[in-house]
Figure 1 (tube, helix red, strand yellow):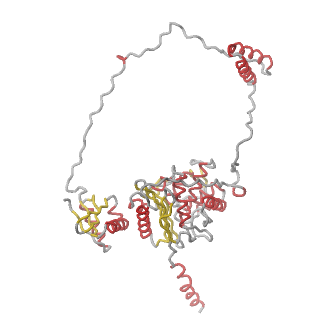
Figure 2: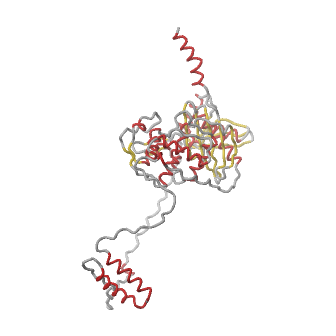
Figure 3: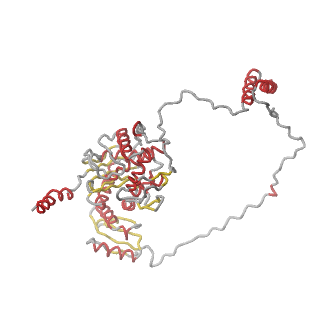
Length: 471
């Protein structure tokens, strides 16, 4: 009987909680000005998942900038960091790794062990680092965000919003542009192995996309903060609560398209103000860490002179004073100062420096340049023109995935198809051909074998496809 009751409780309580869809939220801004172009549930507090690592990385860049740590600092991995669940780099407790590789792994691979190691290396513990993350968020104006860890795995009270994460993405872009290229790398070497980018599908499929960060947990759903640049326009779009990575990417692509349509062609770049430095303070400072104190030094102390150096200093000082008094008697003042120093100094003896250099002999012959003796310049290599022959096996084939009444519908289908079938369509050219009958959505630049294979794979997905031969 007890077993039946437990089973019923599991069916009616546990299952609905695990199967419930994560709430949806979205935000689109013009990154140049910060203007909001679209929002939905943008201020609802939700689980950010690995979007959290954007703040972890922001503080890592901040710590390097302020001299708390360097990119080459060796970091010893703790048991806490090594025991984090996937996604992870595979760090082992006790090993050391350069700080720069932890940054790469957290940014590209979204490695939880690397994120925790970053936090502990900077603040001494993950709890102290989480407090610093929240302080930095407040300084940025992220008023509805609270961090409890460095990686973003679900934890009570660890919450953010689409608006706040969009704000954070804009700060990463403008406050640390020297590191921003990390987010567009399809893969990177992270010290112990090469890791792929969790956002590589959108980066490959959406023109102009160059970041920023993905996130997923069961409680959060599929999250993404994406940025893309086309011409003078740059758009940042954020999605919380996607149902799958493919549907999330498709939704983000639609939001980016919306942003590019709504954003003005020209707009001034108004960079966000860098937040007040909220470094390790008080109990958050790890043992052995030097805490920087704001303010300029009030006095500059002179170092203690080495033994025997007093005479030389006195000579220079006396000479300078005499030179100011009478510029015509510089040499005499120096000689007099040397005598005074030799008498008054506690050093046993002073070697008189040779003040005037010896004159150059009048009969000295300077080296002359004989133009005739110069080596002749090497002849320029002959330019070789290489042409590539086009054969029947060339990339002259393509596929047609449908005809539509508007160009927008055709472009949307092309994008969704590219995201769904990355294997055979990677590297192809998406093109919409307009005719009196409508807009044809095509992929071009394929071999015949690639076109045939792509159509077979799309047909297996119940998608329309016709191969197009060379004209």
